[in-house]
Every structure is written in C-alpha cells, then in structure tokens.
Length: 384
Image (cartoon, rainbow, N blue to C red):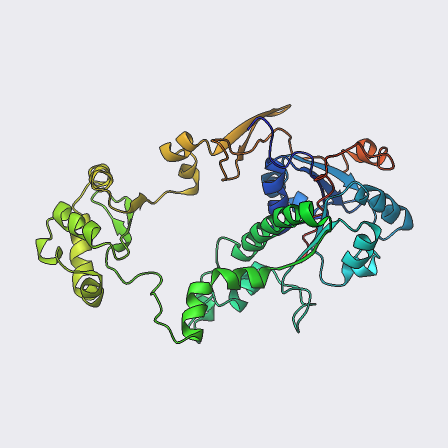
C-alpha cells in the first residue's frame, strides 16, 4: 500500500476504556486521523493503567475539552466542522444533554456519520443501565452456570462484548463512509454491546428459534480437546467431524480399533474413546507429536502462555509486532490483523500525552486544512 486506505479521514474520539479506543485503533492503523477528545484533569480513565491505554491509543492525537462548558462545546463544534464521523460511547441521552447529540450535530453538519456505542443500545428497558463486559456476556447467554454454583463460576478473561462492539463500530464507520460517497448524506449508527454479542451467538440462537438441529459447540468429537504429552506439555486437537483427520490421528497413535469410526459413531462412544486417546498422547513427546500432526495435516495447535504467544515462530513470520523508538527505549505494539496487499496498516505515532495536541488542533479549528471528499471526523466516545 503506497497510501493507507483511510488516509484523509479524520477521527475525533471521546472514547474511553475499551470498545471505542479499540475501534479507533483499527481505523487509525489504516490511516485515519484519530483525535481523542478527553476530559480535563484525568483524561481517559484507562490512563491509570499505562499499558492498557498504550495498547489501544497509538496513532492518535489528544485534545482536552470541557464539554460541559460553552467554550468547550464551541471548540468541539469547530472540530466537528472538519469531521467525517462522531462516535460516542456515553449512556443514551448524555450527548443530547450536552447539546451534542446526533440530531444536533447532523443538523450542524448533514454529512456527518454519528456512531453511538452503548451497553444495551439507545432504546429498550435497559438502555439507561450501565453495563461492563461481564454483565453483557451474561445477558447474551455466554455465562452458563448451574444454579447454586455461582461462587465457582470462572470469570471470562477476554472482554468479548467490548471487542465485538468495537469491531461492529469500525465496520459501521467504513460502511457509512462508503454509503456517503453516493448519497452525500451522513448516518446515525447505534451499536450495542449486547446486540453485538447476540449476533455472534447466531449459531446457538437461530436453530432452536426455527426448530432446526443444532450443531454441538464445542463439538462432541473426542478428537477435539486439550491433551497432555509425555513431557508434560499441552497440545490441542481440533478435529470437528473430519473423518480423514481422525483416521490419520489413529494411525499415528496406533489406535486402529477406532480409525474407521465416523463423527457420529465416535461422538456417541466418546466416554470409551477419550481415555484411550489421552493415554496414547501421553506417551508421545511434544515435539515429535507436533511434527507428525503437522505432516499429516491434522488440526492442532500448541498451548502457549501469554509470554510465549508473540515469540512463537508463526507470529514472528506473520509480523504481528511492530517496534517504535521512544525516549525511554523501544516500545513494541501488536499490529491490527488485516493484511492488504501484504501490509497490515502502519504504526507511526506513540500514544499521546493528555492534551498534547490542543494548540496544534484547536488553533486551526476555524480554518481546517482541505480534505478529500471522504475526510471528516470520527468521534469515538466509549464510556458505558
């Protein structure tokens, strides 16, 4: 890519915490000019955790505005004049009370794309309720705990509601900007964390609604699980109905009595097969088994700790990290995952200090530089 695909798109971001900043990062890495609009004093609450803030806020600039003041709102509207998109993440109604809601801003600038990220959406009985990721996952049906065992329930490590809504927000932004090229009009987007997770739950929700057979997930196939090798390392098998893979696995592990079973047969006999499979794998050294599985194209993967993931040869070849030089030394970042013509976006700006770009941006707000037809602002305010 000689030119990043979102070059010329400006992003004004009031986003805080996780969903909005992650969405803005994806867009910034593809060339969008993402400007954080932060609260006076403390800025984004995630600044309390420098690693978290740095994870999502590279390639961005920062201004500090008090949106509760007339002066702050006036400065913000001056920035909106050069904006493509405003994306906010307050609870429904907050932006309207600030006189900066979708209706007001799109009246001010009709081609503006206004995106709201919220926990439960802009309407409905829970619309005004605050909700962080655990509550969203539970409401979407991901947290399945037998009655009486709530104290034993493991809490999810990955904030799926945050990530899902961030990705739908980023998709919504590029879709709305594409639509604007032909219509000339902006859009108002409503992205709910709960809606986003429910969408991801489609294969669990759609079949029973229509009285269709449900595909068991995770599969009941005994070749789908986590196993211990002879040298106490862990490896995963992810055979999910592939009979040819199962046959090859049985040949490797000397289990000919199970080799000809199809998925239904081995799933129904999993209580008999699984102990035999575990015993056979427990006799295999990790490296030898790894190579055999790879040579026979059997679905598998190593179990890695967080400190091992980015050191894995696959991640190194894929170039999943990028290093920037700082005054304190080298700072490493994880690149966004989309490769376009072999390139995965560009990380060329360190996370901004609070209000670092106030003079640079606000001094020119009344006379914004000329942009292409696609250039404006993306406002990502992601407070639930």
